[in-house]
Image (cartoon, rainbow, N blue to C red; front, side, top):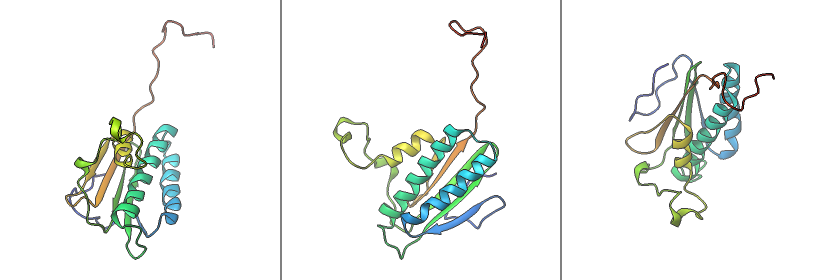
Length: 162
């Protein structure tokens, strides 16, 4: 699996890549369901599935609401690929774009009670890579699969009889 070409639009689907488009948020659930089903098939852990669902949903919602301004005549392109050890999701809208480096910090005291403004923050927290194209109307998010953490034997307080 190769990483997407940063700064370009969405390329034609390659082997393992799935591509679709949507025009409204009501079309999002089947896309996320297919992505998560593939993760389950490949044995991705529940915590990674949660992270990917949250980040992919935020990226798609941002594309529909902020990029395309809920205009049903405009499409949001979604492209994804799930492998055994990494996955990529790309979202591209038809909007003018934005500067992701100038999004207010939602953890700053003056922003704590704002209703919005947490999507980019959540994507950055839950994904291993978050890359925007130059125009700011496309994002690629990546998650790497890690082996589960195991406690070393003989830790104090651990009951070894169970």
